Image (cartoon, rainbow, N blue to C red; front, side):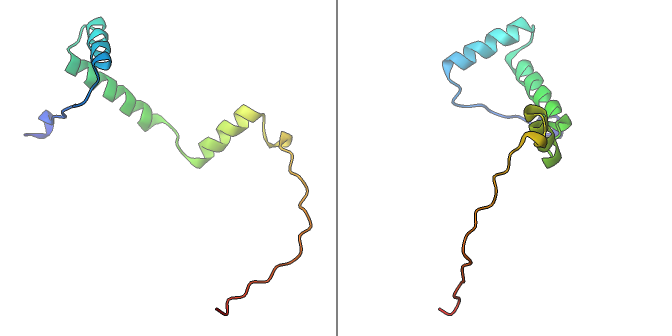
Amino acid sequence: MTEATRAVYLRGLDPDTYKWLKVRAAQHERSMQAELRAMILEIKQADESADNSLGAAFRAVLKDTGGFDELEIPPRSEMPERTVDFSE
C-alpha cells in the first residue's frame, strides 16, 4: 500500500451513526468515504490552527471572568510550624 492509498477501517459504528453519516454524505453529494475524509481534514485543520498553549488557557479564563482583578484571595490562616522527621 502506498502513502497515497493508506486505508483505515472503522468497525463497531452503531446503526444510528451510520445512517446519520450516510445522510450527511448525501447532503454534501459525496460518498461516505469522501465525507469522512472531509470531516477528518476539517478537524485536523482546526486542531493545527488552535492555540492549545497554557497562555491561551489563561487568556480564555481572563475573557470568561473579566480578569484577575475580581479574583478574591482569602487571607492566609496562621498555622503553627510543623517539623518533619526523616530519621526512619
